[in-house]
Image 1 (cartoon, helix red, strand yellow):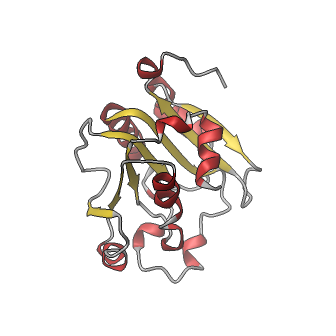
Image 2 (cartoon, one colour):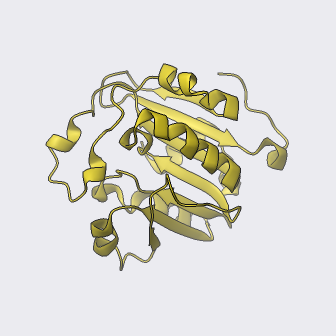
Length: 193
């Protein structure tokens, strides 16, 4: 999905991008997709885009990209309320299921405006890393065949995240999108899904 489509799906106001500080979490994101999200955010008026990337080889590869890249593992990096929007697109599946809840809780408690996360819906990409000539072991899916029930069993909805699916499960188009927005900042409530 293109970056602007995530805004439409989660009903985030494009005005929230203008002047925002964005954290892009790079756990497992393929290198061929490095520029799409930060380019979109900066073109939309974002003040800052920072990549948090665990893989040193990716940091070296993109050190001259024009975007700030810091080395760190989202499971262990303390975040502070200096982030407006956190983007974890096709990242949750690269952690073990039990590691996802603490990360989503930390993100929710560490951002000012919103968290947008997405992962494959089903098993289509579970062995994708075998076909890639990847630089990173992070490309491996540690949680396989993900369904909304997995997130519900973790209690993620108790954190205020909502879930949506797009496309068809177990296909290239199947995707689960999780979103959380600071309702107090915007004075609105997410409609029930």
